Length: 401
Image 1: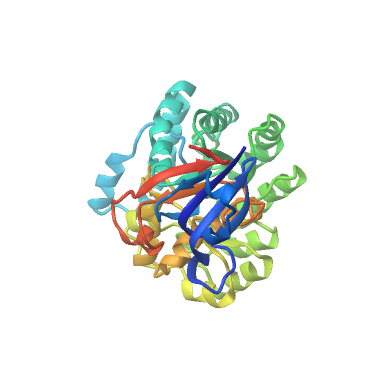
Image 2 (image 1 turned 120 degrees about the vertical axis):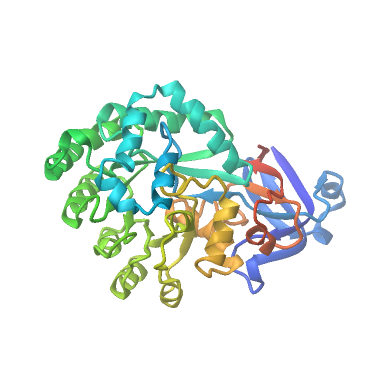
């Protein structure tokens, strides 16, 4: 199928002398679900002009990519929100049996259909923000049956909606209650039983872990990573959110696609990420919701040339954020990213964080035709407005979605 979208302003995010890779008065040629060309309207033939779909000057960007979510879960954590406002810390709640483990209990109890029904409105909220690709982690099961259930739901979400779903196994998220005091035994079980079985079932695209004082130590994450690499699975890591455990450098050493959070990232960690090409995942929703005060070292990451992705971290406990556009605004206002960096963080750099660089994230020939068409004049407006959803329509794989 061939179609031409014309009379548009394209924020291509491709390398360009123009900010955002802007191309004005442009036409976009799509063939068989891929971008074939971006050309000035004046260069279209008379025959092509007759078939142009007139976008009436609207802005076109690559479809947005939310590269870090925990979108499938059971229950809610509203009471913990109250407890934090009363003075309890995230770490205190977690150590007292709340936090992730309360969601684990609810997710284990929930049926697959219930999890799917709860997750669909969350996914629909992201789609309404122009998202065409979303990563979804497991990690609220912490046993083989529930982790598999979560990952099956994530796969089903990709079939239910016009969106690409990338699944991530996050078995090393927290220590399940049946393994209390036996973290190494749980890691053994994860590496010997859970991850190989889930990979063999075709449910896992990537592997993540939580390297933190309230989660898993670097040597334990090393073992998870070694297993994932033997299985040929790309790596991600939650790193340096609450303390400096050297997780980012560990992730870089293993060639991880990204290390995310990074509020406590050291200069050594920045250098390691730069050398390895590991993406820095900026998650301002958790920073905001937990009322953190230590900022990730954005200026150091800039100087080192580390690409910065921006994501919602949508989850029930620390970032119940259902809007990638709001995450972009938070990245600018809280972390001082520029609007151009924020848009790059939800397109080209987010694609890289998912191992999809070269396939999507920019408007260039050969890329998948995942596009967002906006009722705005300038791409900075996407990160500027709070609570505004200016999406006109999405195109997913060359078709209206």
